[in-house]
Length: 427
Image 1 (cartoon, one colour):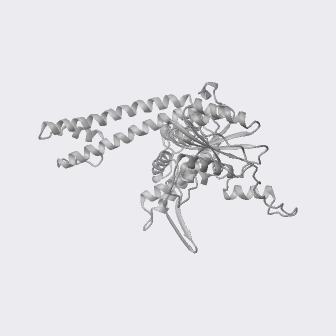
Image 2: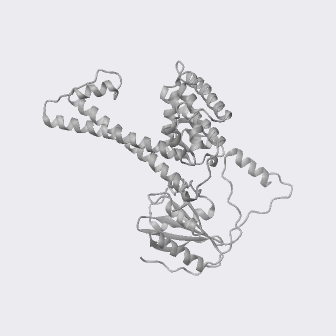
Image 3: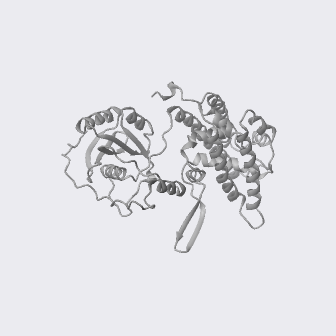
């Protein structure tokens, strides 16, 4: 593929630095600044560079990668060109840049996409730093009307050098494999849901209605077995729809058995077991939360986890006008759905059932006490929110899901995972 020759780096005057603060200024005290940033939830400033750094922005596609360079000792951004999309092409790029810039640290970044995490892990294995950036967190110019691969790479390199980009969490390969298993099961569940809706709409067009109150129970399945349509063609369509639903149910059973077997040997199994002490969080829900959220230690506070799940209310404030809307629905949708579904269980008064008691056997006392506090608090919150003239039950469930995520964050940090096995880090 066509590549561009590197130009000789030009001597550019470094950017103007802030004047030295007065010696007695408490406002510029690093300890006080770090404390205020931690309380306000601000990201930590990038560490001081000890040597030359070459920031690289990659616009990654299936068969090609556009590369741009942003040296730390310059204000310019140079376009390296377009290379192939394989790992071997990236390795050649690393070797060429290491030879052309001896002593300079290489820092790569690219936007999250279909290529996933393997490229990031490959770059890290060869001694260079790499982060993956969420496309929604990359600043964009509202008036920009020209978009090309090279411009996107330039923008990534420029923003990465300026410290405006934050990398997303890169899970362990084994953790990613478990997450793929759980997401595949979620996809089958969605397919079954759509197939059920299609069957209901098909029967409604034929004016066939189920007199019961709950669908897809044993009584509903017996009713479907008695359905007889006027034409053979329609009967064939009906039977095929029923077969799709039954096959999806069988696939879900196989997935759930496989997930239960995998979790037993997973390094996050102690954390999953601790989360099952909560009402509404069984093995499948606990494994889903841990697989989707990853290491809960990376969330410094519970509100950070709530924001990551998109359970915080949206807000539009201008001047003295402040308006709050529904939840933002940003971040991980699968984990958010699992959290809200678990929150529905707190409608009933707090009690330790036999099922919950069996799940809590052998757990630390601090974990079981946190689970009981979650039951008492969330049930009171539900009664308060759904009182006369207050919120709908769906809105209250979303609010309970937000608070439940705080208890999940607290319990997940009480228990440590097992040590990483050597074979789990191999590519």
